[in-house]
Amino acid sequence: MLNKNVLDEIGSKVNEILASSPARDVEKNMRAMLSGALSRLDLVTREEFDVQQEVIKRTRIKLAELEEKVHKLEQQLQQPAEIISSNEAGGSGCGSQQ
Image (cartoon, rainbow, N blue to C red):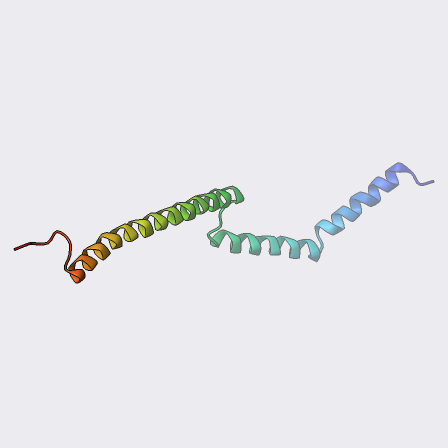
């Protein structure tokens, strides 16, 4: 059976080799490039995104409500105009009598 010290020595040598290998350098360079690229982007956290998504959802609901109110008000404005125009066309109503 192998001595524990021999196994520890082999493990430390493997770690040294991996630490100084080109693969480790490539990994470090890739991390640096990605970190630099991501830092230039205007990113937000997931929490901020979720908050803004909820705000937009409430805004859309409010917009739909307001559009419905405007539509109802426009209908109310149309109704008196229709009554007035039908009275003028028919000549009846409480216009001037002579």
